[in-house]
Amino acid sequence: MRDAGFVRRWLATTARAVERDADRLTELDSAIGDADHGSNMRRGMTAVAAALEKEPGGTPGAVLLLAGRTLVSTVGGASGPLYGTLLRRAGKALGDAEQVTDDELRTALGAGADAVAQLGGAAPGDKTMLDTVRPAIEALPDYAAAGAAAARGAEDTVPLRARKGRASYLGERSMGHMDPGAASAALLFGALAEVAAADD
Amino acid sequence: MKMLINVPERVVADALRGMAEAHPELVVDVEHRVIVRRDAPVAGKVGLVSGGGSGHEPLHGGFVGPGMLDAACPGEVFTSPVPDQMVRAAAAVDSGAGVLFIVKNYTGDVLNFDMAAELAEEEGIEVAKVLVRDDVAVTDSLFTAGRRGTGGTLFVEKLAGAVAEEGAPLARVTEVARRAADSARSFGVALTSPTTPAKGSPTFDLPAGELELGIGIHGEPGRERRRIMTSGEIADYAVDVLLEDLRPDAPLLVLVNGMGATPLLELYGFNAEVQRVLRERRIAVARTLVGNYVTSLDMAGASVTLCQVNEELLRLWDAPVSTAGLRWGR
Image: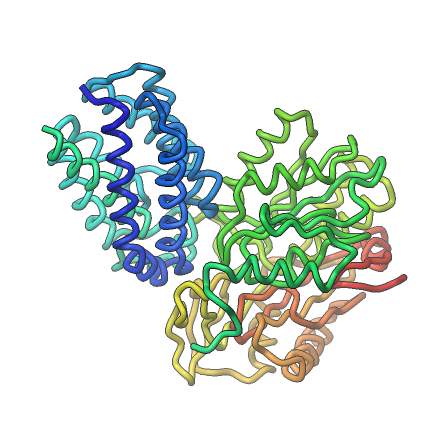
């Protein structure tokens, strides 16, 4: 069973990973976007870490809702609404249970991913964060496998042609570059694997 | 890269503080990043709200004032604002007559304004939206995010602003904004890449002897790279691309827009070539505007926007406007 502390540790670990890799994310974004994904995600995750410190959410669902709301309010761009929706929808799906099973967490994240797909109108293969998020969730409840699938999913976006977001304007020239959103989503699921490994 | 800044994280806040000092006719909320005309909400008037990433100045904050926008929400550099800003702006300008969101077609802008519209409606504010997608360099297909909104935004904001100032209801203001958006087409050329404060080096690599045709306004590369061309050759290329898409049967408003680092000397010279090409194609020009209006930080280059107008739109274009970035007629 996973409690609010688990989700808080997950998000704090993600914030540290984003901080560490912000320059790399921005570098990836400068190849096919507008060179701000790293600084945007860092701003958002720093705000999430601060919000969680100030307002200790009592349930896994409440923590995810707060984190999602904070991302929507601080990130901007496409990543703000998309990441915010992923976490908010997952939080909503978990409701107010004090503890959740790994299967419940998996189902909730799946609902989050569905909402992201609907909001952005993207499908797997479009070279977006979903190319990381989908395989990672499918690998759950094996957390280590989810982290590995996420990393692989991000790598798999390299040859793809972008069909959504700003990179889509590049057409064929978007090929040969990793999608920055897929890269940051790999950090999210890498952190989840790390925290689960420390827990178990 | 040398920049006149303190630290990258504070670029937008510092600019807003400076804007507040220069423009007492505006209320600049630096903390929440909303720029509102001081007399808002104007009784009975539809509120016009636009916004987008910073780095495109004077768009959008420079277009707040009588005859144009009621409020603008500047995001981080090249990053759309967040819904909280838009809802705050809508609340500040709504007099009960409703609010029109003018949105450039970029994924981030669209998603955040959609969320904001939902939230504002929950607060009892009637909201309509108009999407600007004037950039013909992007193929509008299922395989892209669709045409970008660029220079045409200025026409939409000015024409809708004028009809709103006359006291037209929300449906009518929205209709004028849609008509302006549907009638405008843009095409841009980059001679250099812009440099964002966060990255500190050019976004893309453009060698000295080359230019990029069909660029957007965020340092995203365009549709074709070529050896450097003369101003006349670029005008021929750009106008031809525009006229492939827009086949005007009425006079045009022409915007020859600088991307930030191209001097007016070059822009006026480029305008001479654009006008020559239009004359050669026997296309009537009603009004022309030349200057830096929808910029991309320090990018060198220019865009051309053509907007076909009927008598009413021309009258609205000529109506008085009083903003930091655009001012005439009073």
